[in-house]
Image (cartoon, rainbow, N blue to C red):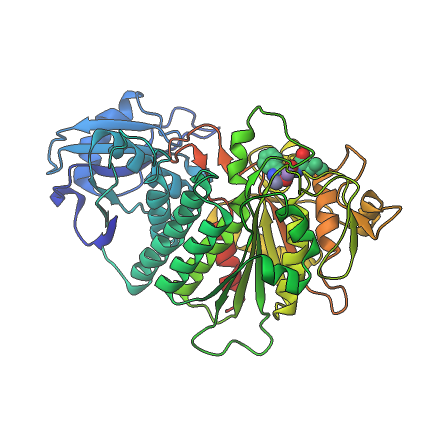
Length: 505
Ligand code: BES
Ligand code: MN
Ligand code: ZN
């Protein structure tokens, strides 16, 4: 998709699809107020006025209304897109609104469109431009990669019509494109079936991305895992005919980072297929477990954007990728394994494999020099029980670091909810015969039990600030949204990138 800012009046635009945003102006005091365009342009106002007054279009978030051959304009189609109540207006509603316009255009084979930059006190222009670009690029993605009748419906050009374009808006446009393309890069990886995206193939894709964007990349396998003593990761990997992949990506900033800036370590769970292993999962919905590498995909995708945005902060990523399979050589309930850190782990359930590979990934990232950690993982079904498919779970051992993550959510529009992982929950992973066990016997607080396990592998002295994102319930959308395809959501990617950038400021 080619995206540009155009200083052109809406009336002069000859685009096949001109999109203008409208808000619901009704309030408790004035319930009958008609919707209003978020732009002052007289020609647009004149064309839309009768339809705004008619009551046929309420400007609810995601609602559309088409005016063909609008009088007084040069476009063939004027599309009104609702952004909901004016009192709730933020750039995030424009992210969705732009997505709705793109998903209106695609099935109609309209491959060029223009969005009129909305103007409102609650919409800072640069933030609004980046949100619109992000929404448009994320919307321009479908999951039908392997269908013979896949239609190439991608948008070719997107113009944002603005009365003036300043350098800040141009930067926002470029950065919004990088953020959303990286999110789509993650979605492409997550969407791949397990037979195609093996751990080895994930390593190849990461290496190709690193070569394209100038990152250092190493991909290791069995021998290196043995050398490093990654007994937890190896235990999961040993049941599969596919060799594991330990992927390390490194970003060095062009200018030296601030002396106090941390070295950020991003760690991803890359289970390319999770059968549950010997503690095998039921058949129903097991196909979904191809997306058990979404944490890894998020980290690889974040590194892709970081390489282009070049923040002044050092970042490394450690990806632990393997399959979790039942086999004659698979690890078993009751086994005791020794993690790279030296801790011994009693295996209770082989389906709690993600925390095992992450244990070694977190430890390894610290040995490589990371002084601040963030991991993402499709770790527990329990996080969906707690939070549904709206918020992803956030666990942290460090309030200021968690807050720094929450602070960038106003830029990205994503939703995370903090969950507890204090030491009062530690009993859940106590073992009689080893240092810890990989699942508690308890049905309660399953997502926290997993977080408690991970926390065991994060240094307490010196304290390494750490965030764990449990994206198990938010990484896959069961139903399509007006602004986004069903399937892999790419959740967390844009927020991780903005969080990393916040350390460079
Ligand atoms: N990959 C799953 C978690 C998962 C479940 C992701 C549903 C997406 C949707 C993870 O490896 C797992 O199996 N977790 C178990 C842990 C249990 C055995 C303690 C779970 O959540 O059931
Ligand atoms: Mn599992
Ligand atoms: Zn899993």
